[in-house]
Length: 303
Image (cartoon, rainbow, N blue to C red; front, side, top):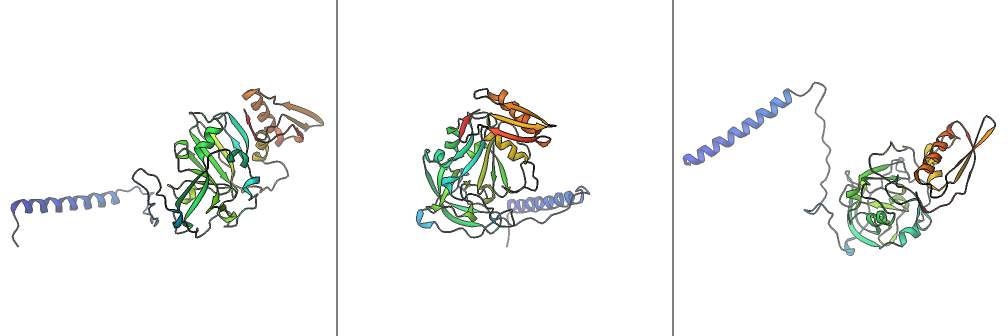
């Protein structure tokens, strides 16, 4: 078979490019830092996303079940209140929203309800399934509590100690929901009751199960507790338990040390000054005995 001069030049150029690429690859391998070594890549399936990065939505008739369960607590579902009508979730805006405190179902029930039939897919083969999630958009919750534009990140914590930090642009996406129904029934405990974050355009690990805490920040978060909710090996209150006093709206603390009783107050409407005073007092519980925390109330309140 005869080829033209132009085709001959094109073939030569292609061969040269291939050879050059191979030479560069071999040179890079030979000059790799001594402390680095090749690692085996994971076999992770790609998420089927739309061109705009959102998740494809399916018809209600395509909804099925979720195959597989994954918890950090050796795949054992932590024992918490699974009834979404009785759930109490701590909301700490850290000065980036007008309301903080305890979030309950009646608070969410006032918001518009949305349903999506989407694929839940983890990086591993399971859990996986196309199911219907129903709840409220995270953006509607953020607007309800008066989240400010300088809130940059959100943290959600689950009952098994797992948590995610996500940028607010992602959380405010219209497909991101706080769901309490799975296929029109309460979410089963093994799949994240009473409330689960659903981010359908991310792998399943970002759809946090059994939410216990929601936080906002303008900058960064401190390291989160690593133990499951309710786990304690000390008789002294844990740090997160002590901070619960602030979340629940404590107005007065009484601490005892060396036979003396000290009182700390946080008056309504005193803003950050009173809140910081109370935080300083709570920090002393490590060396003092808590006598009483009075005027505790639940619900969302201005800070």
